[in-house]
Amino acid sequence: MTDFLDPSAAADFDGDGKAEVLIESEWGIGVLKQNGANLTATVMAQNGTRLGGWNLNTANDDVALVGDFDGDGVAEVLVRSGWGIGVLKQNGANLTATVMAQNGTRLGGWNLNTTEIPTFHDQFVAAADFDGDGKAEVLIESEWGIGVLKQNGANLTATAMAKSGTRLGGWLLNTTVAH
Image (cartoon, rainbow, N blue to C red; front, side, top):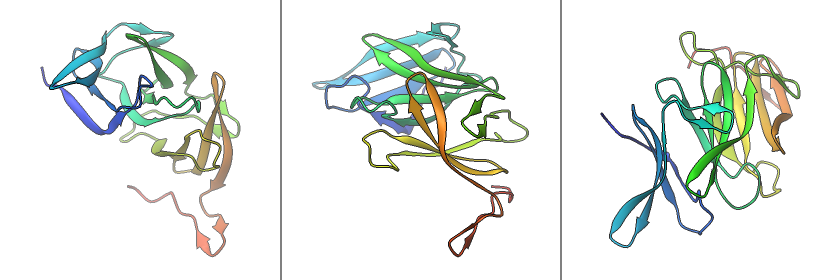
């Protein structure tokens, strides 16, 4: 069994002001925390575990982004699968899905599509605070164009969108080119 460390998945998941590391393998997912000269697992979830409504399966789930999507000073994990997306939040020794959206759901004007043929239609590009409100938003891209998704309670909604072929100032947006 091979463990997978994603360098983009190091963040403060428990709110103590120190970064932890998200780790995944064929077994499941966990969060590692430095404790002196040791690393300890503070969260472990085996595949098949329900994390709120999200059914964990690391063979199909992809950690897309990490950021503080709800603005509480603690990082969450955006996961995607062929079913859709979820936002996982650490709560003590557990992870729970605070947001879930199935493919075909309208997130404001954005039509969610995480199916993989041959690559994911929706690409999650960055998590950053684009509007300065203290919450990370999600920059998303597809062959349709780009958008910015913002968490509002248990939902994500598009706060900005631009269709491929749109002029943004002097820039002609083109997201139809294969990556």
